[in-house]
Image (cartoon, rainbow over all chains, first blue to last red; front, side, top):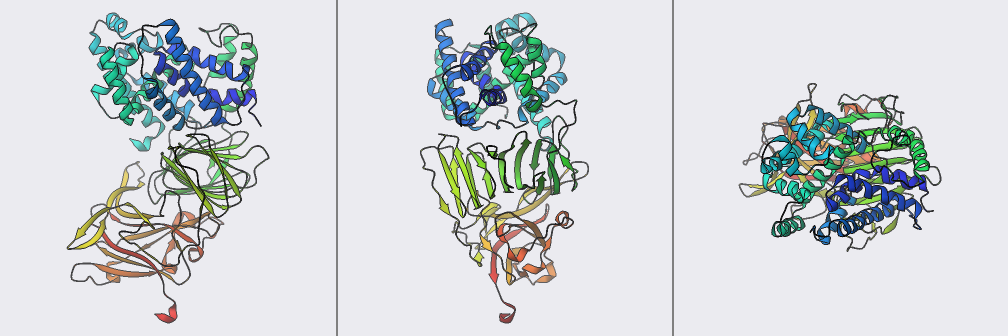
Length: 177
Length: 444
């Protein structure tokens, strides 16, 4: 029996971090990635498609998010060169394979852990993350706003992502620390 | 994500759109070859999207109420201008009560802990993980981590479904309109009560999804492959790599990997032998812990450190061990025990090792964990320092946390699925021979 709309939305929202991130890797704009996720959800319940099970839905959603991202780039930023589609496929397959399941509590916990970790991040570091991701500024604009070089922004952001990853892992699984 | 400044800077620069053509080409090539780099990119992308959510004042946990606010003051493009926004919002509000935990409310209890042994952690909702678990603890949806190879935890759901997780495993457990288990790695056995029509218990792993209506089964997953072994009933498995499905009847097992070019095929779970010996060349059992070495020409396995338990202050209790599992990632047992079974061990150590056995009952459900402490004076060393002991199955004792429940475990009727020989951390341990023999009292 095909999934009903309620189930479709439930599964899609449970997988939203993965689907939005998969779109983000293509378009490299978190706002656009969010728009793409919403379009995918809209298509899933309004277009003439049906899904027999969650896996089919999420595979379709991952492919659709990638296609929408590529289409968006072609229309809005035709000069932009992105990753080869084979590499994107590889990433998206791994995203599908690493999915934590539709009703797993991990996604919400992960967001809470991220929020806690950000609160513990030193103020100047948090300012950079806020400029880059809360406000969606480019790294160049962040460098200008903070008054540091572009390479320093790249290095700081790289380090902050690593630290956030470690902090989130510790929050989610203290045994791993 | 281990520090790798070069790759991580490339990731940040790629996402900033500032890699030039040649740099982008090289970055793409490295991504194609380097799974770790791809994992880093996925992690950074997920963080970026999550921070974008936080920046918009919305997060997954608070989603329902945020959707409610969206009706009066929509954030940028939240569900767009489409006329179905209100319907979707109201639908999401309805769903929210079920799928986004309200941390102000008391989470619903879905199962009761039967026992936890070894380094076992439980976390539910936003609670910090707790490692002091006691039989009778009521559990809401959450995550269970069995850190030690000899660790185990068992819980019983309200409908009588019994779930046992053993040895170095990580699982999320949830129940909404159905039970859903996410086995990220490790081993579980489940004795599943009959589930409501249309609402099967589902088990998701990184490589497969399994639907269960009522049966006894065991599942093992190592991230890249999943093995399902069915002892009773019929279970459906879907491989995530390509969506292909297979129904697994009683007495069979199937392995699904992330490689969809391999056909899903059923294998029979044949009757087990009653005698077995560790053969250094044979694949009938696997040494999953231990370093293969040679001591004066004697091939053997040297114990390696592993986390055995956690102390009261959460410090790690390290032991040194050699572990032998079934022949595949399924928790497949490899020997049928009998009342006349004896375990023979040839070892070299100046500390009497502990022999731990994990077992399955004849129907495939969890059969209990047992151990025997070898004393050095049980045997005399030979010229090379090797000692040989033969331990009667009846001398093994059920582990303490399992003794107080109503369930009875009978080792001599069970199938053996794991042998772990261990010593304290600072003592050398070498194992040259492990065997299970059947020696009737008359022949002794």
